Image 1 (cartoon, one colour):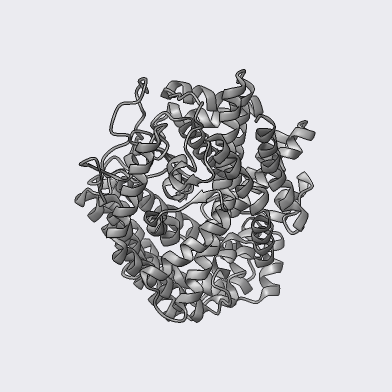
Image 2 (image 1 turned 90 degrees about the vertical axis):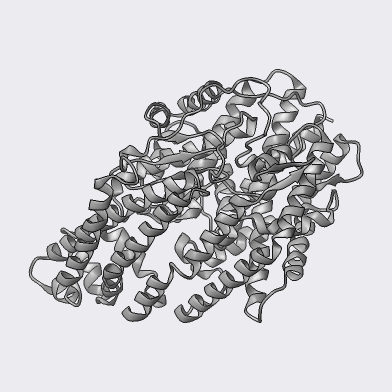
Length: 617
């Protein structure tokens, strides 16, 4: 599941939502998705039948192939028998992916509904149980002789799956014996899966008191971008108070999940706390270290410099943290009706590639988007790829703000990418997170540039540039600060439990370092770490946003210099899905993420925008 980053209350930019009062102008009819392309309903016979089918076929698959892969690889078919086994395995992955996609999308529509929570939990338990019979397959494949597999996958029936076979063998040094893997797999429901669900349901149920009114999370986030500072301040303090009142449970969840990860890492032999994420992302540790180093070195040139400028615009020596993503004092508030947002994004996509715009248009025409804010609905935004035989779905919490339009462009970028990669099949369509953010951020950039080109007023241009810089800082600087915070938390957890106060200290250290002296923090800001779901669901996920943003900045620079044929190369890159390493995908553009200078290209674009803003006074 891919999502725009939840960046604290600043994440209002990720999915600004749900003010309790009506927007300045009507948004029009907001679409709700139609999940019938997966299953008609929770009680549909087809859903129950597929659960039963998955259970039976996983057992049959195990009976047919377990302990026999070496013989299949060595038989006279030239890999045909093994290729048939992989195709059956892929079909089962597709079937179970469809089941869990429907269950999770249904649950995300209202996580407060007990019937949906039970439906999701039951589906997860049954699929986990069924898939236990499949665990042997990748483990046994990885025990086959490297030379034999390499020869079979070079040509013949197994060649189609060569990228996948190469990919899974990267995890060979970290796999355990079959029984231990089965135990880890089955216990996932009652280990990290249960703690993830507790976090989700706790966050959804929180209410924050502002002027006697009890508000859910999304309306509070929306107020953090209100033009009135008093409104922002009250929202920021209420948000901190609400998180602080529940800090005991968030601290327990964080400590437990960090320990759970340490146990898994230790058993598997991962050296560094983030190595498992790097492996999943198919990116080398030194590449990530180079990115982190480049961004941290750029803090003074980027965030410190920009927030000093913004403080001057606000007539203050330093900004209060609730002013960090506030609209500029002279910025005219604008609300985008849904039809305007749709036209803006599709026209921006079309100017780059009519084919890309055509795919994006299907999301509107065929009810693949769920946009309204509803009680209990999962906060934020995401694009869920589901399975190749179906299509992606996009969740938004749309309130008509300019940043909501950027979020729509972002998630549609994911959706287009997922559609293009789908023909690779269930095993090879998924893209590592570092590259999965490329299409989404590129979609945002196209939309931003289109909006900026229509802007005639210097005041409006400054407001747009400032909003874009803030988004880029949130995506690059903030995410690297989050990554640094996570590293500290997980490293200290190896020595014992962390108190809530200690986690808050680590949090504030990174916030001060990354945001600089032009941002002033109050006591209420200390527990804000507790809100970020990526820390819970996907440890060390966050650097993928910075990777993607810098990568897109570099790609866009190539596009500006030589647009001829770029769109075709770009769409070919997206269509590759997970079949190629990032070095192969970037080579046609003359880019290499292993080169330290690569990251400076992306960071220099942010610096350029800040310099333009400084020149505007």
